[in-house]
Length: 158
Length: 132
Image: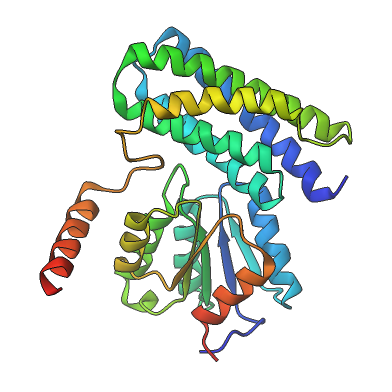
């Protein structure tokens, strides 16, 4: 195995354990929306590196996890968070299986039918959150206000 | 200013793997004066220390989404000091969202690159940051 892939596996394992701990906490306290943002920030790391190393399935699953966690954190809906946490637990387990494969020098990719099922579940949850725009780290309010000004000036100048 | 492989470069990312990927791409381009930071906070400290020591970073490559200080806040800190107003700053981001890009451009980013990227795309971005 490439040294970089080996290090990616080791680094991601630590992150996945941290994700598990965050989900454990959220299971007990689904109103801890800050932890969902932290989850999104941490899974973003796996997403970026997985995509860069061309582990496409890992990248897609991590991206769904990131979107779902950031968006559900903003929903402030504890009933929704309870469901989201269950889905995220499952997704983290899938990611762990992929890393197990990689570390055993097997292809990281899982059976297409299985991946399809997982992705359809993640898509289902994402579909419930389409009204929430922000799917990543927050931009400061004043930046957004400046942005609104910029767009308004642009539309006036047309 | 043209790209000089001998320049002092700071790579900022909270994922060691990503830093290694970027480092690998820069090494292939002949760069060997590379420093790493795992968040915007130590990066900002390193930038100021390097300046005080008279050996400032000549190029900063930073991830956006980091837990302590985000890349956009690092960029704002950098641009808030006259001595760093023109330091080339390349933002690495997973966010292709228009709003993020506009915010980064307004904050004075030199250019941005969206993950994942190939060595060729990376080189193209460097050429844009450092036009010949």
